[in-house]
Image 1 (cartoon, chains in turn blue, red):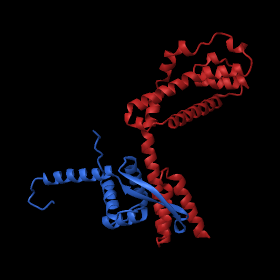
Image 2 (tube, each protein chain N blue to C red):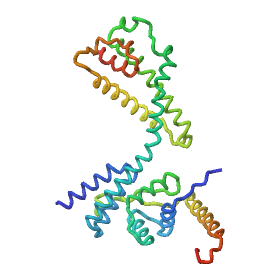
Image 3 (tube, chains in turn red, brown):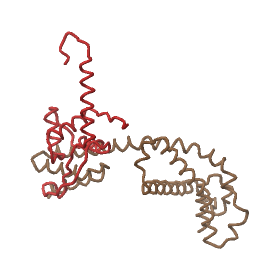
Image 4 (tube, rainbow over the protein chains, first blue to last red):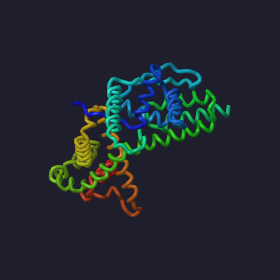
Length: 111
Length: 194
């Protein structure tokens, strides 16, 4: 049985954002979307560091696009969530939901 | 012109100082953002942050191997002592009788063998301790790792010889058998063979 890969908060956000943006996701729209969702500027370098980690874990794959002049002749790298990545997101959601539901009633609305 | 220069400099920094497989894409993304209207300050901040993140990632990745290597090196005297009968006593006078360069090659190989086997053993122990790395190990990685360690060993040895060199000491007059460090012996061999 394969060991379950737990997702960090930022990693989970990146996976969900890639899923939300659909096909042909690369660094610029990903960082912009994350900035919008979080309400704060996101360092593109930290997005790429997390993307490298996720690719190493096999949760996403990437492919190179064509170079373009506004990018100084550098190619875009497109990211896609793998089956394992999808399973990992679902597992994380289930675990968090279970934890959330198991919280004792505190009189307030913690949820 | 000035703008092009600073963009190229920043791109070069990202591509050479972030140590990641995706650094070219990152550099392109930053340039695209700049092209879409981001300020130069934003661009440089992102470049410096990307370099800092890359350096921190590299330090985290290297910390464990470096600590292990430092700890493993402490065992070298014990290894040398344990292997003294097997590795350090070539038949007396045998290599002096051989013509150059065979004598020098023999001397170098006898000097290097204990150190190399020690490095090999350390590498294997490290891989066994971190079994999750085993699936990513390929022959080119092993050759690259070992050739790097051999180069470091040689540089350290030559550095050590230079550090301890004294104007009144003739290095070529020191017999390798009287020097206890095998790596030092190897470097003596280099000096002898000149």
